[in-house]
Length: 215
Image (cartoon, rainbow, N blue to C red; front, side):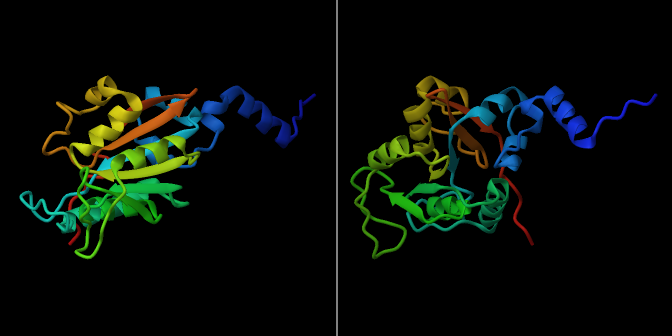
């Protein structure tokens, strides 16, 4: 006699055997695919996520003014970051007041809340802009928020401030901050802060959105 198992029951049995790690859907699958395999289970369980990125590549290495624009390669990088984040839009986004960090943070599809590039620097991306909000206020907002997904656009040194603020100095050094800053040529990394059981941890997706300029 053939044993007949209804399709629905069979699928339920297979799902139970597979376990939640392989069957649960993740809301940002392209990001999870780029994470180290040994972090995947923890990333799935995390209740909050802050993606910290250094701005995409600027028009020239010696252009350091706040209004310095992204290069064509930088624009392509922002498009790649937006693809990795996917839909829906990020819950909240922060950046320094520099044009290059602001343009990068716009990859999250959400209006970006800007803060001063440096304490006391009230200049913004445009000549008429006055920025009074400092980075400490952004830290406090992000810490108190219940947003599941936050995107932060920063610089080589200020990216490290976010990592140290949430995960600690030692953790920031482990993922690439040396003497409080990222390496000069370190672009395209996504520093993924995630809160698990009330504690913040960080992992890095190396060169995740580093791409060549499109013709």
